[in-house]
Amino acid sequence: MLLRVLLIAAAFGWGISFLGVFLPWPTVDQVLRSLGASDVPHDAMVVYWVRGTAATFGFIGVMFAVAALRPERHTHMIFWLAILMLGTGTASLLYGRALKVPAFPFVGDVTFCLAVGAGILALRKARAAFLDCP
Image (cartoon, rainbow, N blue to C red; front, side, top):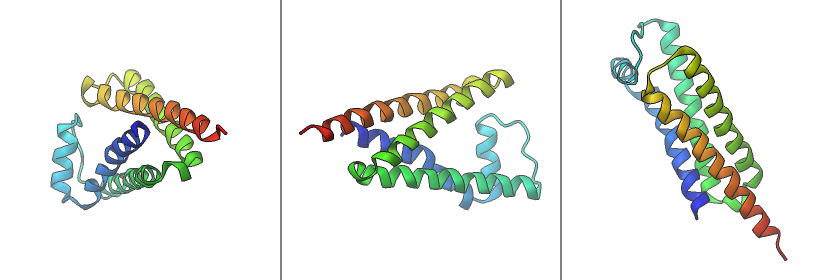
């Protein structure tokens, strides 16, 4: 049950990025600024990259949602999704510190990725061990 809760939380955390695909650019710009961006130029390539990144993150959320629907059928995928969370959290931690980004949203992003990723990994192992019992 807790594994499913963490998978749903991850699905929401990543899936909310779909808003960046569909919201008007001035709204996306305002959201990025509220999250700490100082200047987001209205450049075609920047819009293209942001929209593509939002779509990619959103589809990662879909993968977590699929895993949450039937965790017992997706144990291998859940392992890699946990690794994705841990890798993203680690990269965010390293680059956030190196770039001296503000605590918001840096601490939340890193904590969410590392805590949820570790929880999914630990619970996945416990569930797999439980399912392997005779």
